Length: 109
Image (cartoon, rainbow, N blue to C red; front, top):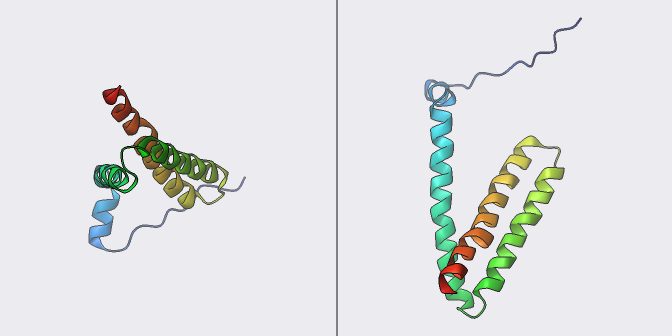
């Protein structure tokens, strides 16, 4: 029986080898999500200023819809890296568009 285990390449360079190991990989992912979440709040403020209070919930729905479309495309993707990034941005847009603006809506009504 043939050995079917995948050969994983080692990252090149001392810094890459250090950051490739736990807990640094998880911490890097946490920092990326933390920074992107702050950008999501910036998008919320920009949407409020761009569309005004009258159309903020319609634009938030559209933002979440874009996230849902990205999620669907990512689920159908055969490329794991592309699917990961599509899922990341889909989750960010869905959270910002539908969840955070739902908090705004519930606070107003």
